[in-house]
Amino acid sequence: MMAMETITVKWIEERLDPYLRSTYKHLHQHPELSKEEVGTQRFIQQELDRIGIEHKAMADTGVCAQITGSAPGRTVLMRCDIDALPIEEDTGLDYSSLNPGVMHACGHDAHTTIGLAILTILKEHRSEWQGTVKIMFQPTEEAQPGGAKPMIEEGILENPAVDAALCLHTNPYLKPGVFEMKPGYMLANTDRVYVSLIGKGGHAAAPQQGIDAIAMAGQFVTGVQSIVSRQTSPLDHAVITFGTISGGTASNVLCGRVDLSGTVRTIRTETQEDIISKLEALLKSVTEFWGGTYEYTYSKGYPASWNDPALTAALTVSLTETFGEGTVAVNEHPYMSGDDFSVVAKEVPSVFMYWGTGSSDKENFPWHNAQYHVNLDALKHGAAAGLHCILELLQTGKAGQA
Image (tube, rainbow, N blue to C red):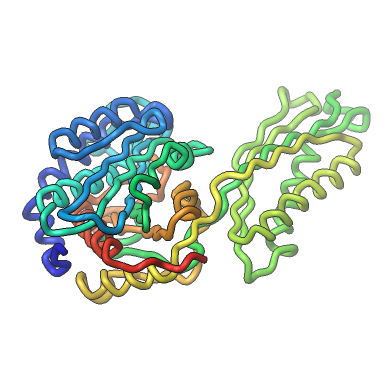
């Protein structure tokens, strides 16, 4: 097996740093929205052909790359999502997006870059490792129901069957060389809520003759705050956020309808179901008081993502031994963000970890922000750690499911 101690950041830098930077810049300049990643797919396929890696298209705009070492063995999958977001970039970088209104603001360009780099090393050193590696270049992570499910339905976890899966995701709040994970739940259920409060329009000077939908919406939004703060255990994890609200046509017209949309994040299924019913109970109470009606749609999204405890422990120890103390930060609580890698984690033992891509010399902005950026020095760290984890998982015995 390829010696773990040889896989250092410097070793990767000497071999691949120019490639990492140029590939990342190309992908960053050519972002494509979910379900539209045609150019990105073509670029990945061309790179795989150049490297000499077997591949096939999946889920319309995705790609599965597969390579087997010197002998059969365990099979490990690494997920690299490829889609971008509908955001106008405002980073000022000389390699900013050339696609107006579309930006890689979540690091998927970096994920794709290290996936290609890892395959390059695996191909060059094919005689030094055993087993099979699949890189899942997945489309449509940013748009539910996501691209992981159709790739699974098309057989990415079979032939050969995947024994373990890995996902490295950029994190602008961690510095290069730092990785973060935890056993058990790592990410949340990510649901959507759509609400309409329907009243009766009229003259603003005679509100008693109508039913004010804005007043109903205000009471509803205020009441929502108590669901988490007063009706959910403080030891539980839950977030309810309404991100859009629209209603009304003029300052002197009583509003007859207000539409809201939001998201609910939970870890436990019991909490998720409780919030679903409490939101409707609140809607019923508010509209009955005002004499209005409501429409309510609750759409369950990506499930909470589970990190296999045995694999998480193995990778924590292995990364620390190879890259040094402080390499792995074990977070106490799950993140309330979500990712459809959780669909993979429901099928095979998996680990989702954050990879530090922040900068020390300028402000770091959150994911999905127009000024989000990836520190180019972090690419070699991600490639080194990703390769190391794959080789560790190829050697690690079967993990116990949750």
